[in-house]
Image (cartoon, rainbow, N blue to C red; front, top):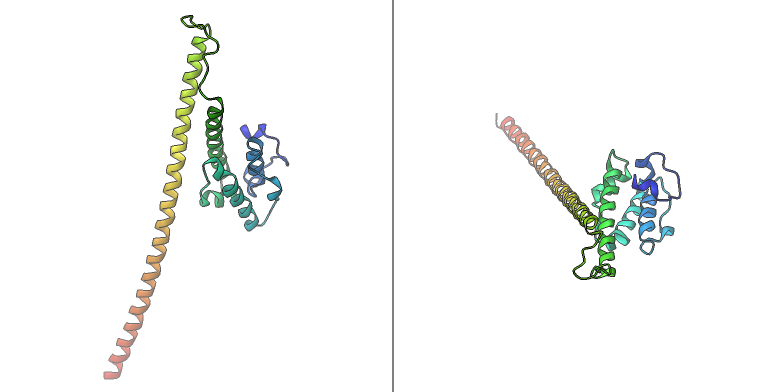
Length: 196
C-alpha cells in the first residue's frame, strides 16, 4: 500500500477511522507537496463538524491547487467511515496528485534530451527505452481511464443528489395536495350533513 510508505503522525489501525478526521490525508498531501499544506491548520477530531472542517480545508486550500477537488458526498462518506469510502478517495487522490506532479516535472524538464547519443549511432539502451516508453504510455492511459471513471462517478452522484432533492420536493407537494384534498373532503362532508 502506497500509504504505508508515508510517515504519519499516528499509527494506522483502522484506515476508515484513522482518516475520518482528515489529518492523515493532510499529512499525505504535505508529504508530496509540503508548500501546499500547513499542518497546524488540521487537528485531531471526534466531532463530525470538526472532521468536516478539516476535510473542507484540505479540499479548498490544497487539493484545488492541485487541479481537483473531492465531492461533498465523498467527504461525508469518509467522515462517517462508510465502507470503502476512504480507499476510494485515497486512490483518487493518488492518481490526481501523480498526474499533477508529472505535469509539473514535464514543465521543469522541458524537451527531453537525446542522452548524448551520437547522430546515426543506435543507442544500446534503445530497446529498454522503448519498453519504458510503452509502460509509461500504458500507465498514462490507465490513469486517464481511472480519472474519467472517477469523474463519471462524481457526476452521477451529483445527478442522484439533484434527483433526490426533486423527489423530496415532489413528495412535499403531494403531502400538501393530500392535505388540501382531505380538508375539502371534510368540508363537503360537513356541508352534506348540514343540508340533510
